[in-house]
Length: 482
Image (cartoon, rainbow, N blue to C red; front, side, top):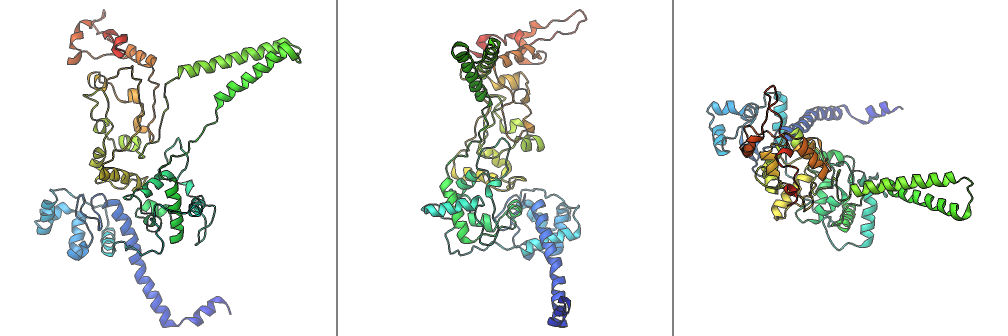
């Protein structure tokens, strides 16, 4: 008897009809719920939460019980139209939330708005489970627990539910010259050790962001395995990423030609295995040239840090902030117009935006949560300074940016295209002097340079000749070394 015949023999027609009707009834609901969740996260989470209190707008948990569906549908589609109609509830909300205007969603279809409402109505808070194992234990692990957690992290042993996953493929354990939006293993460990940081059970079993949910799809962990992960994270917490070492080409050239020159000298003076002295002379000349060139390059680059791009405590992308979102440099570095130094913004400046923007497109919640932890603990974020002149060189940002009208990218490069901020120019004395020789000063209409009006000259055609920074003393030694 074939499988098809067995199926029809083992299932009665009434039972089959009940199953079919149930499936056809639930499938649209599940589809709406999933689509509604995606629409809610895309359009609503910037201003509203579910069960986490007020944000820009009210907490929407339970709103489907307090308001009729038709009212919610109209308000979501065009809140201003409902307010202007004099609806008392809409007007009260408008007044209560400082007359903040909710965007209209006229581009959404009726089914899409109903999907959002269905998702809000079906949402339930996460139930805190009673676990058999302390998965958030932070100290007191046995050595074998740490070793098993390390092997699980690197995918060397399979999970109980099947499959092995190398976590270091996403959560790097060595430094990198490109931005990995996933938190490093050390970031995870430090967040786990922080009592107000990561809940490892929730992260692995109940991910709260769509990015984490997609990344961990197909992974099933037991409580015991999460306990082993906790042991590994507690062991590496507080350490630093291993440095990714680049093959030392210059050092090998220096040592290689040094060895060849030594052999050539020994053979020339003692062993005399090579008949032609021109070979010895050629090796010595080439070796001396290579050594001299390397010595010149190293001496020239001494204390210069061109290309320096350190890892930062938070994965802050200038490309996203200054490039994609067009954030003005002066918004964060607001002292450049009146101070010698460009300030590094405090966490409170970050919170001006991230009080609302809580989820990053690339990094999820993890990096933005670091700002919240810094604010709540009162601990400053220890940003790593990238551009740093020696102490004997004087540089004033206000002089250049405010008085001289110099654009930021003149010295810092195209910051709006950098995920990881790096030092674009070498900032050497020669580079500064050449800039002062070539840069023209706009004396006309600039009160700061009014005392240099006498330097303005015209040519035979009556056109004003350019005045450079050098002409007003910009290359005098005492301007920078006083």
